[in-house]
Length: 174
Image 1 (cartoon, rainbow, N blue to C red):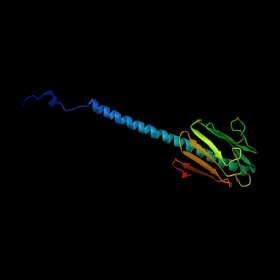
Image 2 (image 1 turned 30 degrees about the horizontal axis):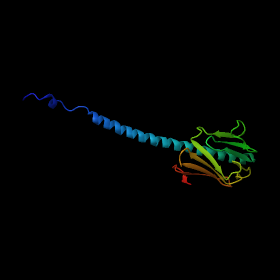
Image 3 (image 1 turned 90 degrees about the horizontal axis):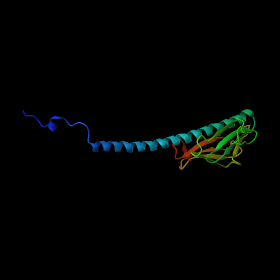
């Protein structure tokens, strides 16, 4: 047996520069796709959280009206820096500290989610104390900035609340 040249004696080890660059490229494409999906998921959870909180706050206002046998008002300030406040006996200004006696909620990250209302007189709705009925049918719509995705909370004259969505899973379609 003769001595084999060095290239034939050693097994192939490692990878070439081209193989390494291909792997880095695949990892970069996967990372970009993951970040895009993750951002979308975070936005959907954020708007869902705001919508669920609004739903429960309106349920609270309605139950307080019946409990106190008094009219409870929910006043909205619309736009990107939105807020809403709950007060007994009259509307309140949620942009003024201490104006709303029962609760105040403001946009946690102004500009990410906008709030609009429809069917309400003066951007407020109230629940009467006898049965918790609303003074009007109306709706509150939350929209993601730069998106067509939205969640709408509808309020019936009986005070019933219903959430629906366009573009966000987990809700009935609007």
